[in-house]
Image (cartoon, rainbow, N blue to C red; front, side, top):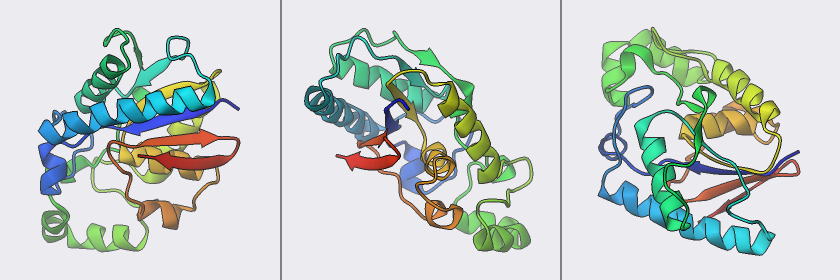
Length: 197
């Protein structure tokens, strides 16, 4: 199977404030832009080590602005035309529905029953209008099975967790609690996962 060089988008103000973003289009903050530039350097080192031609790989991003801005900074950092990449809607972040824009504490105060159920089972419980991680896992598996060659992808923490479970690298319970680092590169290769930062 192809190797996936997976990057989470850089930090946004909502990340810094602990607000659930989901489908909301929140731009990178200054730290997020720095993280994207750092990720480009990490990626360049990985390409050198792996003997990869940076110009020969496909680059694909979530359609959300924070992922696209990260991709453009990464490509610029690699000396590539910033806007020469594709979009795939399957890489979009998990939707949080009515919780988008709220902190976890505000979500709990607004919707205590669903919050408690989701705390017990983050993989299959979603707020009203939102998605379950189980649904995101299915679309990430669909995306992964459509990838034909080694690929650079920029997406989100939720989609990274879902891909880990889809490929059998984590369980739903373990993945739900994982922190996905910004400014790092997660390499999915030969049934294994490694993080470089």
